[in-house]
Image (cartoon, rainbow, N blue to C red; front, top):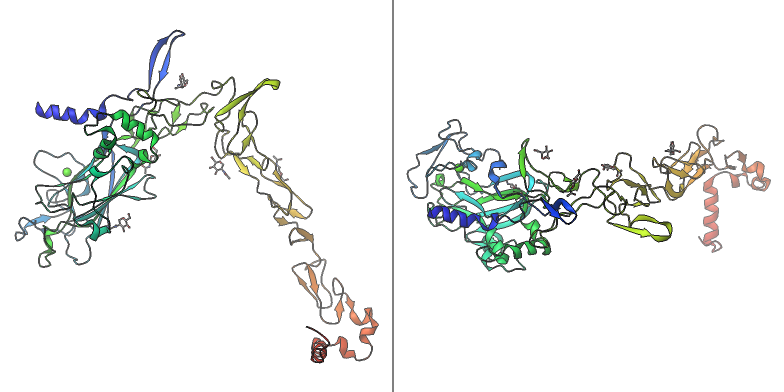
Length: 527
Ligand SMILES: *[C@@H]1O[C@H](CO)[C@@H](O)[C@H](O)[C@H]1NC(C)=O
Ligand SMILES: *[C@@H]1O[C@H](CO)[C@@H](O)[C@H](O)[C@H]1NC(C)=O
Ligand SMILES: *[C@@H]1O[C@H](CO)[C@@H](O)[C@H](O)[C@H]1NC(C)=O
Ligand SMILES: *[C@@H]1O[C@H](CO)[C@@H](O)[C@H](O)[C@H]1NC(C)=O
Ligand SMILES: *[C@@H]1O[C@H](CO)[C@@H](O)[C@H](O)[C@H]1NC(C)=O
Ligand SMILES: [Ca+2]
């Protein structure tokens, strides 16, 4: 009975029934209709839905079989871990089974036989779904808690990771951080990442087995010691930037960095008593459904919100098709006690008959035209219903009209194109000689130089003559003695004077240079 009361007291504040319905059928002066509320699923035991991964490969004991002993019984190393024997194996799944009274089942690592190389292990928990923590994360260690470990979290299915809490018997030494306690945090620091020494001391392996990430103590900063004032917590979750996200995870990772040492230094002559053993990982939380669902179900291996308010998606993170006349918004805990549903609205229901395809939240009535039009269309759209693309953009044919990516920038080449507009398939209007969708190429017989210019020479029709070579289609480089666009003219023919006197004057380049040098020596030419 006492146990039951304790259980009730424990569960009560977080299961108080607030925000547990999404809508109800009410009768008003205008007759009966639905009324909608912010709503969220109940908290669940999240270990039932998790996938686990333990790194590095080979860190789980028993392959090959090995012996180990305990800090309490360091000279009786007769315990055995053998992965091939179900009775002696310690696979990762034993961290998530339900414990029979008294008999703990646990995952166990290999022993620290490679000392002084550190004994490192990562335990990564993934839900493939955002979860909001509602109670402490409790990790139970058998045979002693690690002297150094770290908890990390991801909010994007493991793409990026952030520290969540540091644990060490000496925070300064292990992480160069001062030791703090969650109880000492204040309203402005409730989401601080800290290092605690509370769960890493040696106190005998049977006595203190748990390592916690304190969610309740953080909630208590706002809701009071018994979490009686949940209204205040909900108000804070809406208003304090980053607070909601602090309690939201898609993945958790325990980085075990140094095992229990039995209250003393490492004894090299007996490394069989150093290892990690985890019997349980309790994670209590609810599916994050953005206050648009009160049910979360496990389907095809993934948690999925049962979205209401005409929203959809794994987290009810967008509006259903044909319900996108306003931008999607999360529900809000405020105003108390029922919150705001911020439901998605059907096309045509929002304001007169003004659909904005989710690119605007506002409509305005233009008196002299007698039309309602969307205001400040976003995502590069324009038009009465934000149904067109702005000038300089074109319609993305693979996107729906209400997609944020519906308009693509034309990106016309500024030099090669007439202007920065393009047609419906993204083609720009090119100046003479330019081509390509963006007008950044030249037609055949044109060359690019700040725009397209007709070729002066090439290898086909406009050949350089008399041994001249065509330089980038721009000009012929003529041998000495020839000139003209295509080197078609002999200098001597064109300009008799060049040939008078010393024929060598139009002979070699060397002579010309010598001449210049001589003039320079006399100070007549200033090179
Ligand atoms: C554990 O994960 C971290 C990244 O969070 C990685 O840097 C480290 O190498 C991993 N350790 C092991 C033993 O796999
Ligand atoms: C994760 O969840 C999404 C949405 O439910 C699903 O499409 C995807 O296959 C899941 N991925 C994995 C690895 O389970
Ligand atoms: C969602 O759309 C349905 C029609 O499909 C409508 O009956 C219902 O009232 C809408 N719900 C909300 C919250 O707008
Ligand atoms: C076109 O829209 C699709 C669907 O939203 C998107 O995946 C794609 O990136 C968009 N294309 C461009 C070029 O923006
Ligand atoms: C856009 O211009 C390109 C090139 O001129 C043309 O091939 C294409 O058919 C045009 N598309 C439309 C929809 O007019
Ligand atoms: Ca277990």
